[in-house]
Length: 221
Image (cartoon, rainbow, N blue to C red):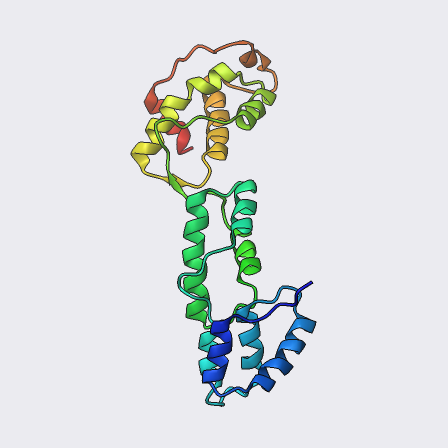
């Protein structure tokens, strides 16, 4: 298996800073021994770490090893994040925040893809946004409501008022499903005196006696 080699750009950077080929070879062998996923930034980081901070080359190397503004995660990482449920706009937004944050902190990132994966995993899979006119509760939300003896028909009948209310409020959410779940339960209780003894709610579409105003009141309850 061919051993990793630094790019021509990295070799040229080190040469311009006055490092000899012998310096590069010695540190290259050491870097291969200690890093399972070698890359140019990690290699430059090794050089920077070998110098004292007041060395004239230290800052130049540190800057050379910084994450480029145009850095992009590897395609395989993007596929992994998509499979994990991250929306494309969320990945793109987090990339911008990640790059800006790393550069502002002045950090040298030896393996940006690994750090970016962790960065994304600590954040919502979708960006917060207003509710849209076509929003619908998903199957999991409806099944959870059925488990509380609330019929699918009744749950779906709440959707138009739910959308209208939150559009008027202007709230943004990264996931509207738990919001609807909570509000559907609250509305069922308010409208039908829902309790463990009221299992008949699941037997069909309950009679609607409230207005949009009563629904709005249940939202802020």
